[in-house]
Length: 302
Length: 302
Image (cartoon, rainbow over all chains, first blue to last red; front, side, top):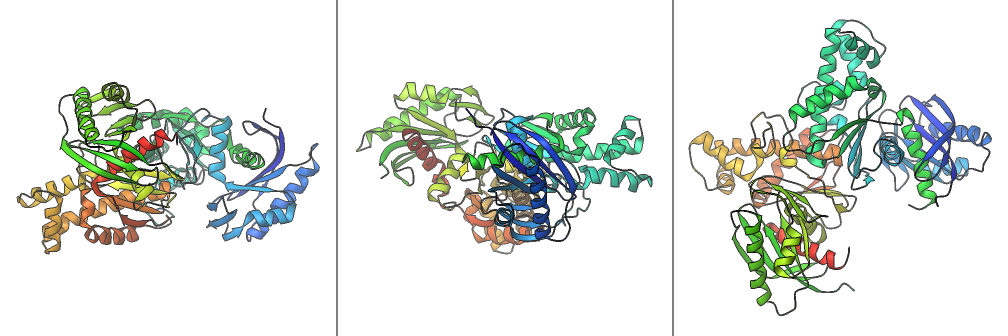
């Protein structure tokens, strides 16, 4: 029988860092206590300082000894060497996260990529459970994908936000036509305001306007859905996933997102295997739960 | 030490079928005797009849008992169930190749997909050797890709010929903008003739004209390279391969293909890992050698 472990999981985000005391097995974990704070600015050392103090607080709140730490970060990640290779947002390059976190905390540390860890959690205990091939796509400020291929979330970059789907708009990455430039939550909010001059707090406001029948919001939403459908079509041709699991803030729009997306994909698809479109189950906890699973996997040498 | 096996490999192609008596281990095989013939027309039963008679001939020529058969076919393939799910070209649907081949020949039969088997051969003993992540792309009448991900050629469709790269030309698959519609050998020959009215025997003739400075051939070649570079860029964003290995008839153009392709990719790439561009090592024998490796893997339960 799988052994119950007690770990501390930390998901370092571009703006917010989430930490949790997590209990469970390699198949199912649960957050017992959670902490959130703005991600420390400065450099990777500042981030590790913050991780160490979150670990101190959560350890003090635990009724059990802590077995390990699971830490996930954005950007380019070398999971095997334990190195944060590059993060444009957070400003690090080739930083040894595992070594420094272990030195600062005294706990063995498992290390991974935030999006892939979230995909791992959706696979083990969320809406990608039981699948062999799927893509888990969190949509927030940016768009990325965790690629589940032949039963495992792979180390591939999965940058579905930065494939060119032909709309021609420039993207922050230096290319044009990127999915993210039209379909991320940030892009939807920005494009609505550019079009109408009306400020919105985010994509959720635009979604509410779409539901209320606002034509401008509808047009921006339609273009977002089209870009996302074309990105998914590329993934379908290359990887043939059984399902596409949509997460992140934009997935809170629910049917408003999945129904037109399914229609658009139906219109575009020819020979490709048609993936089932689903909403993610774990919300913005997925990264943290995935970090905990990485820690448990490390303890069990999976 | 790896045991030497003697197998018969058959690569059923859209026009030509290649068969070989192959000797070797799971790491390296060699064709001892080869046969080629036009693929039997009619249905899958006719193809299996042909496979059985090729097996008979090659068995008679062997100095050793035959251990197994390796059979690879195009289209959509269910490797685990041993079924040819669909081939538009050859006209079968849900055909049990393993069962019928085993009944007809009396030999255990390993079954796979032609392009993925070719990728397997390039990985074990060709120009993808030692890599963990690569894409092997044979370019002939069509364009497909074998995806090497985390050390194994995966079962993913890898249809890099049918991703939309924005040129807008219609493709036989029902979409527009497909890589294959501009960059396959067939497309290059067809587009040159459409442009000039001059017949050519194939893409090799167009390549010779490019070398001789023909402007029309140069334009068609340039558009082929652009489409292929954009397809590779998508794969780089999603999968981050260390290398792209180009095979099939078009790869015989050598530097005439790889040099402008490298330049074009340099011009397009921003954040993606830049893959090394290489030519395949095994030529049009790759599928047959891969089929033999599948047979040996089956015998060794790899």
